[in-house]
Image 1 (cartoon, rainbow, N blue to C red):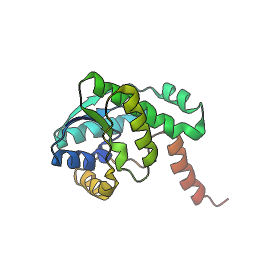
Image 2: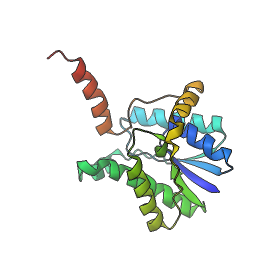
Image 3: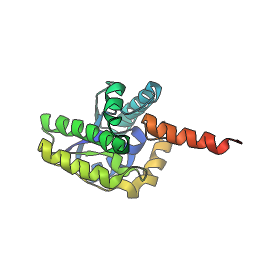
Length: 183
């Protein structure tokens, strides 16, 4: 199958790409992540995705637009649904890119992380697929999480410490600092 695979980052792509290639899928990666903050982090993840794609032997289509204001505007509409919004905009863009470029389906590397909201991603992927009239190729890649971590370390890929958005950055670092505080 000719598949467009949304890539959130190089390390998360390691296992899904290996697994999909092993069963004969023809893959193209698609980097579109307007949620990543700050810009330096966005640039590191983009460069690592390019590095990974070269090492894995797959084409990578890149939308390098740093649309942080658009992301924040949408996410701030209802903070309790910010992850839903984030997944939706990225999967919709991947579906549109897949349909417009005659791929047979689309999927996402977000499905590898045990830290992401897996069932939400699956549901949004299926909704977007119906709306955009292109199949969402669902695979639960979580079983390969540890293998992907091993692969990304072996390939010396930059590994980020949070999901990417300003909200997850706060949750990660604020909690750590608060735990270290003696107040």
